[in-house]
Image 1 (cartoon, rainbow, N blue to C red):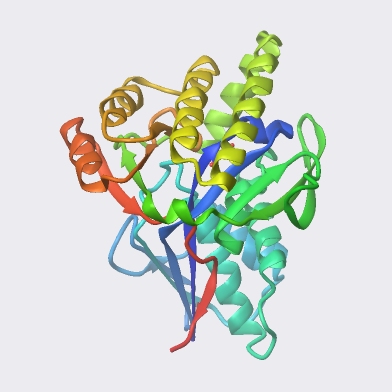
Image 2 (tube, rainbow, N blue to C red):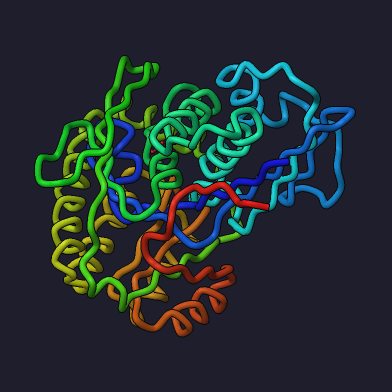
Length: 332
Ligand code: MEV
């Protein structure tokens, strides 16, 4: 038997723009996905998102898992009993599919190569490949890198000299080959005074659909590339504020980022309502992840009050620290 956990993520700045090589800043959150694997008589799966009993494993219903089993590991051993437990909202912009891919990759690695230490960079690449195969080839490595490595991660089309460079990766997308550099960031100690409060609208929005929606709007209206550049400028300002521990400036950059994401067409009424309602008790707030529903995030010193506002708007809150640990094997 093997068990692995991988955290979800919250993008503070740069979602969508990062698919086109602009930088994004993301942090791992406390909630995540645990995968437990056991050898079994038949292929079966229990996924806490859908059911509390084991059902037959069907490849077409589990594209991320199938990709990891057959294409990455080329696994042809005994059937597996796969148990998935998650405390992340699903299809909500919190990186649940990357966390699932990373936890699955780590658990399968532990099961098949128990004496070989898991390499978190390799794991992030496995997660990215599964994301890309499920998102029609358009996926940045943001979710998978943040979930695997943990902490605060910057993903960018170019190497950023002032940051700690971790690895590079590339992908063939429908728009051509893209490459990204992944960096880690030391958070200023002031950041420990703040909390992230995520608010789920209750509306699930598949990332693949949101990403291809933006791709279509960019084709129809190339001027939207200027908004992508504006997001890059905001992301850089937000990153500097994070490194300096200037929470007010981080919050201002989050607010500006939300306005730009609205122009890209990825916000909606529920997100805008929760973002507006939480601002009074926060340094800043914005939608996070793919949008179209899913989640918003507020940066605050008053997490309980912000959580109440989210509930008053009809949303579900989740309070997290900043930059939790990355993927890990759970010893029995
Ligand atoms: C999804 O969490 C973030 C997006 O930027 C897509 C991606 O980076 O692959 C919307």
